[in-house]
Every structure is written in structure tokens, then in C-alpha cells.
Image (cartoon, rainbow, N blue to C red; front, side, top):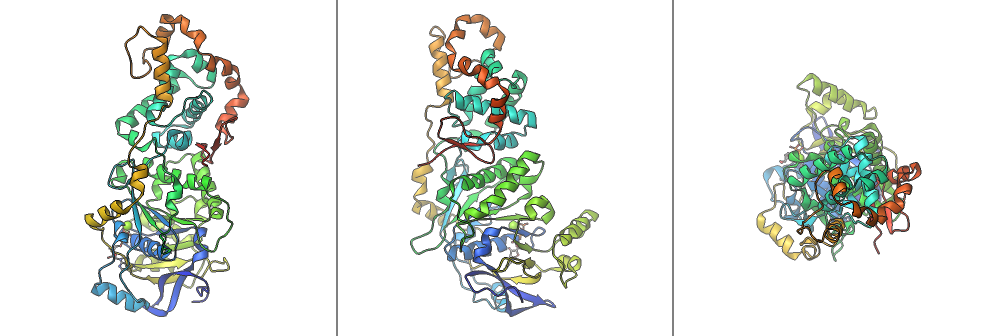
Length: 511
Ligand SMILES: Nc1ncnc2c1ncn2[C@@H]1O[C@H](COP(=O)(O)OP(=O)(O)OP(=O)(O)O)[C@@H](O)[C@H]1O
Ligand SMILES: [Mg+2]
């Protein structure tokens, strides 16, 4: 089909279909150099989205491009194992002119905070930052900006926020120390209390495991094997329905972090990484305007760092228009039209496609499993015509890899040595606990700052006031309007080796 001829390296999606018959000579491809122009894989349940993702991932890997994907249903670990031939696969291969052969990809398995089998993935609290954390905690805008002030306070006062208990300790300290709290300005003890409760709940759900050190270095997602294949990093996220916000926000952190650390490369011949964002609707549901804006900006800017982002979800309508407009490749599997709501979503989906010779409203409901309506960017960057495509069969296993394969991957990996064990350096929690112990030599040792009401404590220990010079010195400055807006904006902290990302997260510069 016109527009799909590619001279350079490309990914083979499949063959053009006419009257339900695939023409093996009409190949539908995506130029490799357009894979940083983002994409969408959409369709109703069971229509072939995951297999399409698998197909893209294994071809990227074979062509030397590292891939990251989040596995929400446990059905992507098959990428580590060669596929098994079957009558169905052979028939599909013949239809689309594919020489099917079993392949397996070099893989690395990750898990969030070590909950699961893979290499534990953690972020420090300060790198995760107030914006993403607010999203996870379900805070409103006022609470979010208050959390920003708390992070700023900690940063300015030499209280590193590495894990969850560091942040809890700082907030308890602020609630217990009215001078410090009022010094911040714009942070009420009531709001601090709300944030603290949300955090303590979060902690009780076992969230401590996701935050702290060693922090994951996203460069580890950009590896190739000695024989030039891209490593496929699979983040196992079982039970996503229990924690949709945490999981999707964590993926966003990875993406934001990639954006921070990668150099500008313009439009490279091949992407540095392709990042598949499965169940993408979770990211956008109930997202605040600020959060949405940050996502849109990250997606827009990360392209020139050579990272392609592919969203996977049921309908394009799950994504905000600003994001959808940036997606160069579209692989739309079948949609259902059972309910009036389905019909509306179908119409909306059709409206996002350029006009074509197809009756898309009909075609999209009649597509077979593993067929899709496709439009991509040609080598020159122009959108290709809409093409009804029969996708190739993946060469990797279409069911989960066996336990032995996963254990083998883990055993061969160098990453467990680097990330396997959590470390707990001195940070805000320890510093504040030590300070308190010093101030109260008579008191029995306590693991963390007091939870007693602030007023009472101030009465009990009036002598304490003079000792808090770090806060009182900067009190006036912190309270000023300039500093508050500074804290909320993406500016860098004074004199510290810290940069702030699009999400307002602080990160220590590496190297
Ligand atoms: N390209 C393909 N080649 C061969 N078989 C396919 C292909 N695409 C889909 N299938 C078959 O259809 C089944 C369902 O596909 P898949 O798991 O990709 O659906 P899905 O859209 O990801 O569903 P869900 O929304 O439930 O995750 C596969 O298990 C496979 O048997
Ligand atoms: Mg799926």
C-alpha cells in the first residue's frame, strides 16, 4: 500500500487485508526511526493488543532497541521464551507472508519494591517528589502545594527524604514544632495532619517497600546484549486493580526520570528505548490539571531524547486529546458496540482517524482477533493511509514463561547484586530522632519524634526553642511569597546538586 514502503530498518506489522483476505505482498511496516514518535495500541478485551505489543517488542529487541514494558496481567513474560508452533500460527504466517520462527528475547524482570520475583525497583522519596506522591495519595491541589512546601523545607534544612518514614518524620516534626510550621508559611497544621494520615495509611498498605535506596538508575533500562540485541525489561505488576494509581504513577516517574537523565538527541535513526505504557487509562483517570499538563509535556519532550512511548488501552478516548495528538502510530484493534456507551466510544474513535475509503464504524466492530486498523508515520514523517492489517504472529511464547525460565533470567542477571537489598542510610528520620534524643537526655529512647499535641510539648520544653536555629534563621525567607512560589515551581534548590523535573521532583545529579 502506498505510504508503507520503507527503505531503512522497519518493524513488520503484517499484511494489508482486502475483503477479509490478507495480501502477503502488501506489507504494513513502521519505520524504526519513527518509533520515537509515539503510538497507541487500542482495542476491546481479547482483540490482540498484548500480542501486538509483544510483536513490536520482539522486533525492536532483535534490531538492537531496548524495550520497557509493564506487565499487568502476567502475560508478557513469554517474551523470554521461544514460541511454540501451532496450526493457528502457521496459518496466520502463511496469510501474511511471514517466515515464522520461534525466537526469545534477552529479558530482565523487575518488580515494584521487590513485591514479586523480579529485581526490586525503588525510588527515593525526594526523586519521586510531591507532585507524583500527591497523585498516589489522592491529595487535592491545596494539599499538593503544601506537600511541596514540606519537601522544600526538608531540602533546605538538610533532612534528606529517602524513604517513606523520612517524610512521615518530617511532617510529625512540623506538627510538633509550631515555630517551624509557622516559619514555612502557607502550611497549616490541619493540612499537615491530613497529609500525615494519608501517608500513614499508605505505609500501612506496605508502600514502604517502593521508596528508598538503592534507587533505580533508569540507565539500566537502556542495555543491549553483546550480540547487539535490545534488552526487554519487564516490570511485573500483578494485581494492578488494587493499586492503579501507585502503579501508573510509578511508570510516570520512570518516564520523567528518563527524561531527566537522557541527553538531547533530536530525531535519531533508532530510538534509545521504547516504553510501553499498558492500561494507560489508569494514568489519566481523575488526574489533576497540573498532573495532566506534566504528562503532556513529558511525552512531547521525551521524543527528542530518543524515547518512544506507546500507550496501550481500550479506546483512544481514554487519552486526553493533547496526548493523542502526539501519537504517530495507531494500531486499533476491534471495538465492541453492545451498549449505547460502546456505540458512542466507537463513533468517537472513528472521529480520531483521518478519512479513508473504509466504513470504519463498521470495520472496527467486525475486525477479527489479531486484525487492526493501522496508520503510522512514513519515513518522511507523513501519516500513512489507514490500512486494515492482519498482524503477524509473535515468535515468542504467547503464554507466560515457565518458572524455570524466569529463575534462569534472574540467576544470570547482574542487577540483583545492585538492587537486591534495601539500604537505609542516615536521612531525615534518623537525623530527627537523634536530634530529639539529644534534646531530651532524660527521656527514654524513642524511635521517632513525638506525636503529642504541639501546644503541650512547647509548654513542657520551653528551652528547646533557642536550639532550632536552622529553621528560625530561614523562617522569614521561607515564609516570603517569592520563596513559596519558588518552592512550587520547577526551579533548582539553592546551592545544592539538585535538579527539579517537570513533575517538581528533586533529584540529585548523577556523576
Ligand atoms: N498477532 C496475533 N497472532 C496470533 N494470535 C493472536 C494475535 N493476536 C491475538 N492473537 C490471539 O488472540 C488472543 C487474545 O489476544 P491478546 O491477549 O493480545 O488480547 P488483548 O487485547 O491483549 O486482551 P486483554 O484486553 O484481555 O488484555 C491471543 O491469546 C492469541 O491467541
Ligand atoms: Mg492484553
